[in-house]
Length: 135
Image (cartoon, rainbow, N blue to C red; front, top):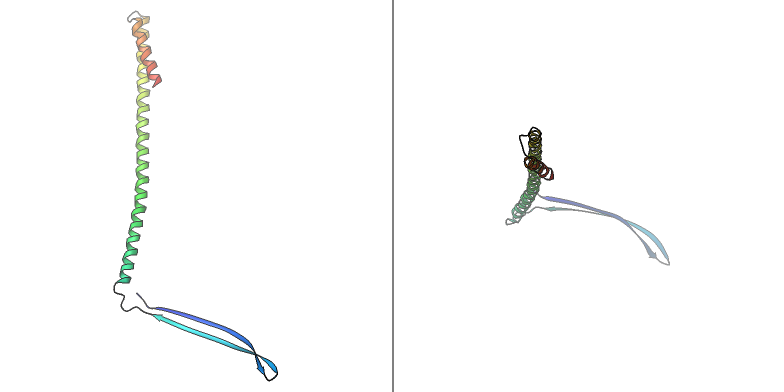
């Protein structure tokens, strides 16, 4: 959008042997050259605006990609967290079921000692507890 100014400078020296009669004389000539280049586009027929719009679209696409990666990471963390909560709940429920089975077995064995239950009742309570231990 703004004018461009470029400056270039060259310097050097040349040495030549110049013949003069039957002898040669050494001649050293210094050289210096400088140029300035000024460019300013008056009419570009929308080319610059098109390049600016394309660059803006590339930035927007990169931003969407960046946000999508964050969204995927957040989703994976959420899924892992809820799986952990589910497993913790299942473990707590299994421990409670095991404690209940132990209580039922203890009660059945006490009733058997006092003659209020039968051996199949005790065996069923033991089997229920053993099944809880296996899970």
